[in-house]
Amino acid sequence: MAFWWVNHKQTYRQETDGGYVWSPKANANGARNVSYDNLSRCQRGDVVFSYAYGRISQIGLVETAAVTAAKPPEFGAVGDNWGPEGWLVRVNWQPLRQALVPQPFFALLQPLLPERHSPISTSSASRGVSPTRSAVWGLRGRRAMKAGGSGSPRSGDPLAAGAGDPGGVAAGDGVGMAAELAV
Image (cartoon, rainbow, N blue to C red; front, side, top):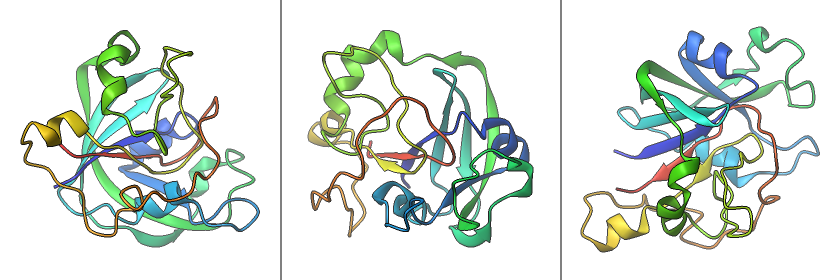
C-alpha cells in the first residue's frame, strides 16, 4: 500500500464528487512530467490525501489503477492548456470531520519532504505550505522509514533515482496531484 498527496484546488469539487483523480499525461509543450507519470503508479488499495485551499479535507482509497481517459468534461474551461488525454484513477473519497491544515505543522513535515518533487514547498525561507503545479508528486516519509516504518518505495521510483526537476514548486495548482508517502 502506498500513500499519496493530491493537490487539486482547480478540480477539487469535480474530482471528489466524481470519485476520481485525473491528470494529463504530458505538459502543454508535450514533454513528460514526473508528477504526471506518478499518477500511473497508483494501485488499488492505496490511500490518497486530498489537498485543496490550504487543507486536507478528504481521504480516499484507490479503487482502480490508472487508465487512459479523456479529460473530464465537467472540468469545463479549467485546464484549457491540458491535453485532451490523461490518466484517470478511481478513488472512493471520504470527507474528514475536521480538515487538517498542514501549515502549522510545517516544521514537523519539512524533514519528511524530499528535496525535489515535493507536493508542498520545502524552502525554509517560505516556512509555509505552497501547492505545486498540477500533477502527481513523490514524497518520502524518511523519518518513518529510518525508524522502521512498514512502508517501502516501489521499485522504479523516479525519486529514488534522482529524476530531473520538472519545474519545481510554484504557487497555484491544478488537477490530480499526488505525493507518495512511505510510512
